[in-house]
Length: 446
Image (cartoon, rainbow, N blue to C red; front, side):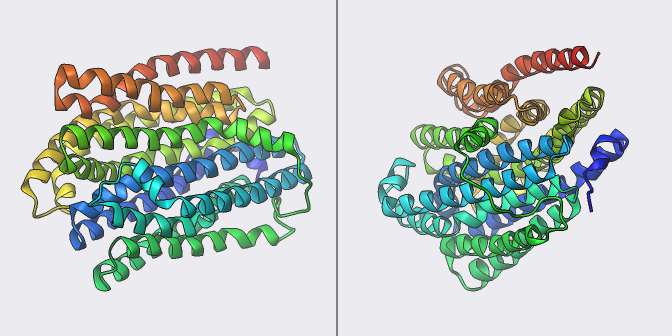
């Protein structure tokens, strides 16, 4: 049954809720798993283990960047092809994307395992942290194909018009992750190895749940025979480059922060940053959930030339992003300390630093939802260049400017305010781009 027609006819408010809420729930459960993972590791192993995992995170971000590049790029094309009424073409596009992603994921895993120690050293692992970083990273490598493939499959299910099942697949993986984490880390005392292994097993289940629907020919999207189309693969990479750049920017900023914090504050600074990343992941989940959840609606209506629906949808999302940002920033100020105590209850120095740093770092959430929405919006319109520019400015260019100049002016506070500075400067440009795009859409429709 074709569930996609509602994307072009249903009321915008109802569609917004139908597609954003399942995406938000899936993202939140994923973030809750990340938070629980940090709590279990922090309590069972200690702050050094949190620092080791944070040092390994840029690798995971790079792997996910590959996944997002293919997934966002391909699913943008799929949504537009479905909007144009070309279902057979969409199936071939999706199948090609899946095979491409699996080949890339296996290649990345093998290269990383072969050059494991040099990669760990390049990520910033000290002699003390090296054993834990290697232990964590090698397990992640084994499961990279299920991590990356699961995202592509779940996004495709949303394009089928089944956002609730997409949510179910992700939620099951996150819930199992928490259960396995508790058993392997807290009960069996398997340390960072147990944390990585728990993630791999849980997301293998999630991957399989999302994998099997593509064998049903009755679904509008299903696996089919396809030929290797280098030009179309290039379109995947181009369309998804902006979303991939966002993830690479996360890896880049994490790496830069780790290096600067190790140099200026020491291991306690990296541990504090790790805890902040865990705590704020819940906020990021809300914002990303909205941006990615409504992307199929934007893409479908772009393919169907429904400009007014695109504008109405994204204006609504804009307002919701602002409200969520204000509420979440206030929440970090009021309830940050109780959350932080869950990670390091017996380390007063770490707690004091993290509570203070979280308030400064959290200011970014007042405004960064608009930048996240902007990047996803232009990807859905197949304007990868504009989307990539937003991602580059907020995640790399202005991060470098901030981390270089702000600490010399504001001291340690400047490190933690770097993200807010980067998001604020980027916001000015994003607002201009939104206004220009809406005018162009209105002109084209008239």
